[in-house]
Image (cartoon, rainbow, N blue to C red; front, side, top):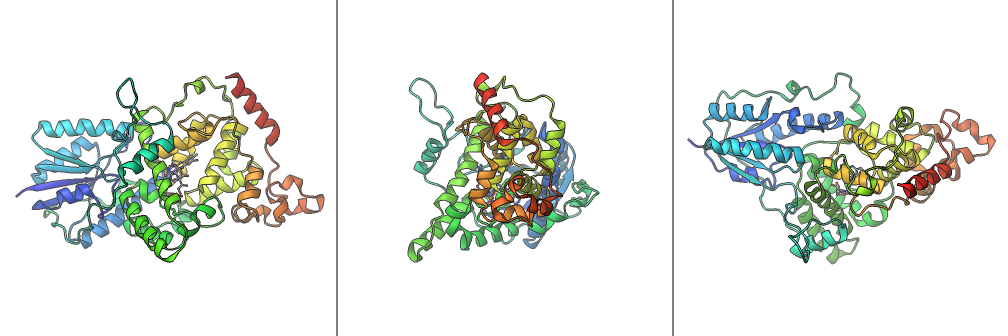
Length: 475
Ligand SMILES: Cc1cc2nc3c(=O)[nH]c(=O)nc-3n(C[C@H](O)[C@H](O)[C@H](O)COP(=O)(O)OP(=O)(O)OC[C@H]3O[C@@H](n4cnc5c(N)ncnc54)[C@H](O)[C@@H]3O)c2cc1C
């Protein structure tokens, strides 16, 4: 009897899952998830990602059981675990969806050739991107096609090809698991920490495919109408919150594109905002994966060589700690860092502001910020995180120029005019009126008592800005 192993990785869903589609017609199907932290090389999953993964594996097992199957969980070196499973199940084929992080591409290639060398058929597919990173290339006159470094041109090329929609419906019935197969429980993987610091995170999210679909539906039915206007306002739920679901593949970009197209048709018929700006953000995600694929060292090195010798500060532990803990004395920066700690997520505009504060006002290397985000974000994603940090630091592709230094006070007054976001995460400032909330040091002495528990600003925004610009001019 032919048995196929479906090796699930960052595609923890049943809908529009091409590897599942390829595997499900065999007589016996073994869906497996292998926990092998060593495979992630220099980027082992952070604590927040591990919490998410635990929940997501539970949800996937539930969904697979409902369809008549189940998730076989294993831990250990991937190649060995696969070999043992192939032998015990007498499998002849392994199907998977591709991953795009440099170390994982390398690992997959090795595993593929080892399996093929033993006569096992391997079928790999694309579940997680609209386009393979190597498929979108610009024509250059002299040489072979080259990767894009500018988003607008890249996205234009994608749009010209036409954005794909869903390819495979969610299967309702799957072949049962072979009798007697051993399986671990997510608890056995040790993904949850002993101290339950994740309770705040738990209140904000529903990991798993159902949670992802519910979020998409709610967003497209509701917030997408005002997306262009509200996506920059951290106090309102103006964005989709789909990033962790996308990272773990609980939903795929083709599903989002298709749902957005339907929404667009509906909008054309009944009026309202267009989802185009939202779809463009999915384009940024594609671009990030394109960049990391073609420039695989940009998770740690600047894409722009000019920044290789940049005079970042060398000693900064106390300042880095203050930034991480949301105790800088700059309200919008602290609100963002505390939102991150509490929910495992931070609003995009505030990510830019906190990152600019770290790299420019504090002149701490962007890699330190990227590492902290990596550990604390539930949506930590090597491609998006590396591009985001390099963009803000000014050293990446299509980056904000280095001299663009976000002023957190002006940004706060513009995008959080009533101070609702700051009040939510920095309750020490709740008593201040809106006109002082983004710069409590400017409040009259009669109001200073209302924010006595809040630290004074750790630096002067103007002087630190000038220091950063001088360093840039000299580099
Ligand atoms: C310094 C910095 C670090 C970042 N680190 C990450 C990260 O680790 N993981 C991550 O998913 N995103 C990261 N981003 C990008 C962005 O902030 C998040 O994707 C976004 O805030 C997620 O919220 P959302 O799902 O509500 O976004 P929406 O506005 O609803 O957008 C929909 C989807 O588009 C994608 N997207 C949106 N903006 C971007 C962007 N600028 N770059 C790439 N993809 C984007 C995401 O997949 C997102 O879920 C980072 C940005 C910065 C400035």
